Amino acid sequence: MGRKWQEVPVTLPDGRMVGYSILKRADTSAYMVNFDNLNGGTVRKSTGHTSMTEAAKIAPEIIRRHFQPELLKRSNQTWDDVLHTLEGKLTKNNNRHATYRDYASSISVLRATITTRGPGDITEAKASLFADKFISTPYSRGGEATYTRSHTTLNAYIRKFRSLWSKWLKFRDNPWKLIDFAEVDSKDPTIPTEDTVTHFMEWVKAKYPGWGLPSLFLEVKAVMGCRLKDLTEARRENLQNGVLTLDPATMKARNFRRIAIGPDLTKRLEAMVKGWSSGFLWSNYSLELKRHLEATKQRSHLTHEFFEPSAIYWFIQDLFREYNRCHTPKINSHDFRRRAVTLSFKAGLTLDEVALMFGLDRLTATRYYMAWQEVSTDDLHARVRDHLTPKPKTASDAKTGGLADTLAS
Image (spheres, one colour):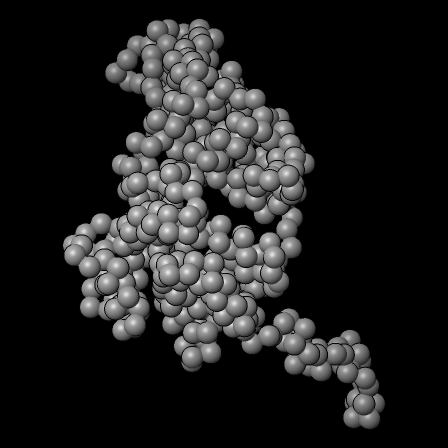
């Protein structure tokens, strides 16, 4: 609970309200004004008056003058300023660089949707305008086809902006907290069939004959059940004695995973990285892609000479998109993670073991378990329906006056 101030709060030009009290210390002749420091704690300043009446008149002006430099700085802060300082704050806090990229991408979407110079000019009205325009504006993925925006995606952006304003920009009044989340329907996790996974893997091999890296990457992902981005950033030094370790510093969940990937995958991975002691595990991707394109007489001059994890990330994503354009049922990268979770249940692991193994919360693990067992709330309800149904009056009830008479008495 916040401090209780004696006087009516002062309203600053940006709408924030500052509570304050006027008091007189025994060791001073002038009255003092105590008020909230919006970054935490309190501020005490002399009014310069020994009269309570005069002190009360000047106190609001003292408070406004105190915050004027901060208000001016915030109102003049541009998004470029925010991105520069945000990267430093996240680095100091030991956040992954992917977190900065995610915030930067969200800010880019905000700027592309509404006109805004910086965070200081985002009011409740502008935040609401962003939500309205974002959800009503279709988008394309580089082609002519357009798609409607997802309410789940809109909620994700609102959640990120709430965090950005409160946690990192330190705005006490957060306009995004006044924007309600959209209602979305809950969905059971989709789990690909083994036939779908097998067909996709065969399609990949046929698409890249003689080049084993794409299939090897997907097989490792299938065995580890990890997120795509986590695997793209795996390091050579983290493959030791048949165990591939994913570093918390590069993982979304910031957990530590060590997976024994088996002798076959270990042999193929070690052959790929033979002679290396460090570096990214998939560093050969760029060079091998160029060689494959040259061997199949395709354009290779656009390939990048140096490896970046994002390169193989988008390469794998494009594989799924291309497959889904001409095949059903569809499959995506995250389906490999869902498959790993459900097959772990099939192998006999418990809910807690699966949650620990894949870095899931128990509720999410339970949803996967129910989807694997094809259990629905209808099934659960059917098992207790007889217990929930009100019972008709029986002969024994009649002898004792009935249930209603019992309750009335």
